[in-house]
Image 1: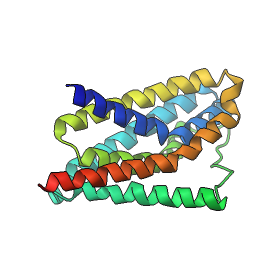
Image 2: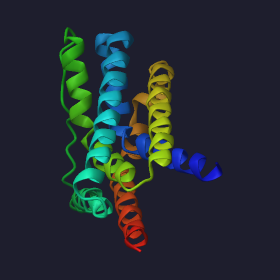
Image 3: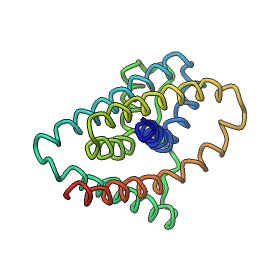
Length: 193
């Protein structure tokens, strides 16, 4: 039971740390288009990404049962590219922009486009796990999504969250992806035995 809680906590942390860019966008969108549309678009996008990661995890077992762990190469590679970009200083300062009158669909699509790093970490993590651990991981990721939405609502009222704090935290994302990729790859060898 404790191992399921720990796995849920790791999925929770992966969801939070790969969504720091989404949190910054959520805060900005709440100021422009209001909290209702921004938070609902964010939550719908997160639920779609989590469900897509779970569906990929379920499908990988049927197609290539013992090779699922090698999906860890994806977040590892994306993390290394992110670190190299940070070192070279080629981080994009301007994120995607959405008009104040954007529909819920447009807002949701913005958050889905910002969540590819979350998908790249969560899908291999779930694919390389037993079914009961997948359920725990999904619960952890969903709790993180709702926690981020709540943090966004609270943060929209706090001046320090709209500044550089969220942008500085975003620099951790490539390192989280590298760690997740290494974990998934290191766990693959134990699955082959």
